[in-house]
Length: 45
Image 1: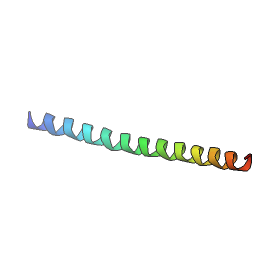
Image 2: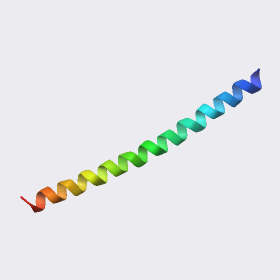
Image 3: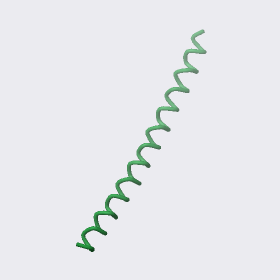
Image 4: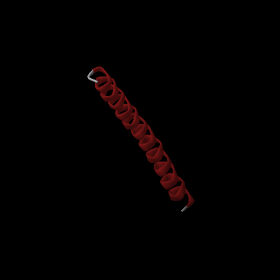
């Protein structure tokens, strides 16, 4: 029973870490897109 508990905890931990990396990448993409939009707006002012 303890072994199953440890396996489940490990799976949840690994899934959590991979989700954080995915969200970090998404945040960087959104930030880059926002910066490009801001630069474009400044050029066409």
